[in-house]
Every structure is written in C-alpha cells, then in structure tokens.
Length: 271
Image (cartoon, rainbow, N blue to C red):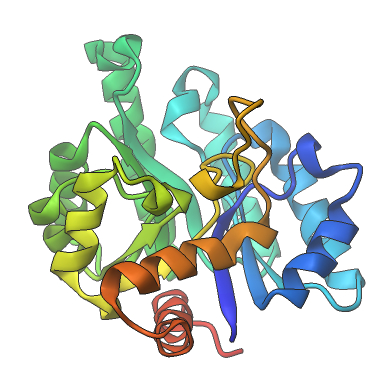
C-alpha cells in the first residue's frame, strides 16, 4: 500500500531528536510521501531545512513543501511575511500554499479587527496561490460559511485540501464542489466524532485524503491511559486508513489506492 500524509508539521522541535528514525519507520509502514506545512514566517527557514534534510536521507517518504500563514497565529503575521512567502514560492518547488483560512475557535479571533485581519491574509494568500498556480491547504475552524464565501468571491479554481475537516455534510459538499478534497485525521478513530463520521459516509471515497497533522490529532488508539496527549507521528497514518476502511466497509488495499490517487490529483503531483 502507498500512503500519502497530506498534512504534517514534521519540521517542529518535537521531532528534532529522532526525525530520521521516524521517517524510516513511516516508510516501512507504507507512507511513501508527506507534506511539510507552513504556519508562521519565523519557521519558514526550518521548514525548508527539514524538507532538504528528508530529501537527503535514504528509505524515507518523499517530502513536499507547502508554506503558508496560519489564521490561528494572525496576531504575529505582518505584511512583510506575505512577501517572504512569495519569495519561497518563487525560489522553491512548492506543491501548495498552506495552511491558510479562517479560525474563530478563540474568542479574541471573533473580534471584528482580528477577524478582518484573518480575512485579509486569507484573501492575499489565495491571490498568491492563483498567481503561482498552486492549490491551497485550508485550515477552517468555526468559520466555514465565511471561508466558503471568500473562495467563491475569489473564484478560486485550483482546489486543494480542507485539512482536518470539522464542518458538516453541506459544508463538505460545498468545498467538494469548489474542487477540494476533505482531509481526514486521527479524529476518525474517535467514536464520539459523529459529525465527521457522517461526513465521510455522505461524500464518498473519491473526495477523501488522509493525514496525521502530526504532532497533533493523535489517533485514539495511540493514546495511553497515563497521558492526556501522546506525540503523533507520520508512522500513525495507517491507523487513519484502518478506521476509515472499517467505517466504509472497504478493504484497506482498495481504499489506500483510491486515496493515493486522490492525493496526487488534487496536488498535481506525478509520483
């Protein structure tokens, strides 16, 4: 089976001590490719260094770059960071712009000034994606209607992935209609994630991709009773596939093949 981890933060310090070992283990369990996702300008250099590091190692997943400015860190973004993002898109082979979008999970981000700033950066990054012909990796939390409205207003046609999807069936269908795949994380392993389970059942396998979002979104089966949060790694991606296959009553092999093709097509990758 070939698996594509379409959303990782494998560049963060959580993995500095054993990144190569984990990458080798991920390849051994079928993870053939992964995306390193940007979220803040101060980490862009580390993101690129980790990408180059992975490219230099043997028997590890193929690495792809997707730099972006995450809405959750909106207070830290400056206009110059958009210019730096554009430089990276010009100088490096990036598969997407991400992760970008809107997030009103925190009360302060609902305040008009900060939410307007989120919308500004989302629009600006969609314009960059259009300019450089890149799909986008969406981060949307408690702001699906507003995010979909911006995508429609921009007439954004390049699609991408709605990462760690947390909306409902109609929102998922709206994003699919706009050319997006729906990103499924280890949250699928949680029996209480009923809304996500309904979405998966409703939209069909042809619109799904899988991801770890490591080090976050640890599959329930990988958490221990003694820890509230266990480090998540790309090695855990097969658990996402396993639970998804059981839910959809499909063989893991057939599902893996479909999801692999979904990942390549939405990111315009020839592997």
